[in-house]
Amino acid sequence: MGSESAAELAALHALAFSPAETWGPDAIRLMLAMPGAFGAWAPGAGFVLARAAAGEAEVLTLAVAPLARRQGLGAALVGAAVAGAVLRGATVMFLEVSAENRPAGGLYARLGFAEVGRRRCYYADGSDALVLSRPLSVAEGA
Image (cartoon, rainbow, N blue to C red; front, side, top):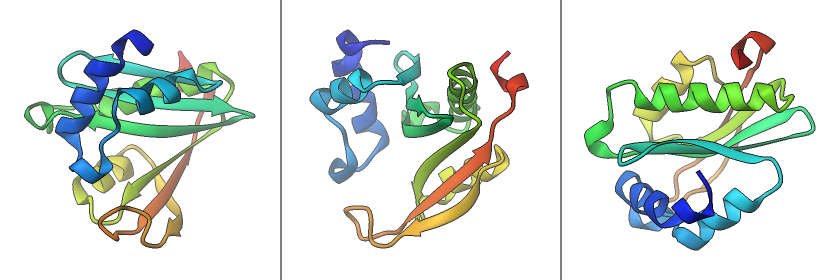
């Protein structure tokens, strides 16, 4: 996955998010160009972008097309991000999710993420962002 994939990744992002939250190709190219950025991609179905630096990792976005949901892809993509973060020396992973996005919140809870903070009125729809984290272990990078 690289900048040459930005248009296809943006199309997937547009399927997964409301128009106010969608990232275009330029935004995705910028994310991919950041130091420590990496991701995993299931073409036509979904992707995850993350970054790792100074022992910490962050999921930047997780996008799963509606027709690919509830089939384990989201969990697999987060698992790939966890493995990539561990390989890059991270010992903790963070992400943000809308407090209104109960399906995603449930997925993250099942994957061991817990709330460590809240950003009030963070999203375009006025919903809060829950800041979640979980520790990472070396075994997850294998």
